[in-house]
Image 1: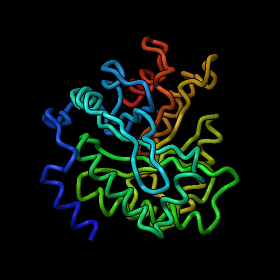
Image 2: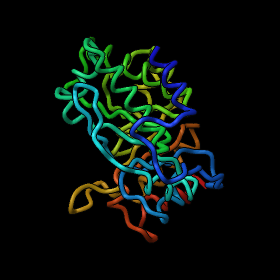
Image 3: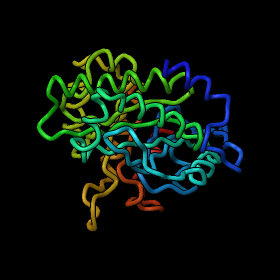
Amino acid sequence: MLLLILLGLAGTSLPGCQSSQPPSVVMAVDKGHDYKVVGFFGGGPWRYQRMTHFIPGFLGFDGDGQLADWDLREVVAEAHASGTKVIVSFDGEHWEENFLPMSDNADGSRDRFISNLAAYCLEQNIDGIDYDWEIGGGFSPAQQKLYSDLVIETVKVLRPLGKTVSIDVYFRDEINPEAIAVIDWIQLMSYVDMDEMENMINYWGSRGVPREKLVVGMAAGWGDNNEGFDLELARAKARYVKAQGLAGVMLFRTDLDAQDEQSMLAAVDETLR
């Protein structure tokens, strides 16, 4: 029933969601390659020209399935003008306070969340969503089932609306084979070196994730001292993506990246071309 209702919303105005701005359209801009280049934080035309997908950050929500207010229409319009899609991510830092009670759905909270999410994506012209549900120490079987069901139900609603669903992963059994089968892609939080990246690729490959669904992560800097910044590692990972037929790369965080010849994003862009 939820899916049928939302499909009907796709061609109608949403109550409380009217905008005076016309919806932006993702322009057919040639990026010079067919790989995904996903950037967390730090947008702007200089970066959009080198990205295929931009994640401006984390949209807040509560355990009851209600979303925080966040107007991204200007960001979306600017990104779309450069042919870059915009994805909203959900931070898993407070997973006990929001992800677990929302995903349980005993009171319909998950259905409410997905319905609100679909309306938000349509209103703001968001192109997809990304789940970053991180649990230190790994997922219990019950938590994995909740997360997997959340992914599956989100895909059921958002895919008919033309929206993608991705998640961020490490060495944990976040989702089950049913969720792996339907998700659009998986972003590997492989920020340390090539060995960690290859081990993570092998781990998720053993879980049944095809290589064309794997996006390799890299750190474009951490904190005040720009820890993790490594131009040669960025180039090596991009070359690996091309050689092994992976889906692309993800940079965290592009707002800490340079905007000149020392940029990791620029190095990735040049290598993939």
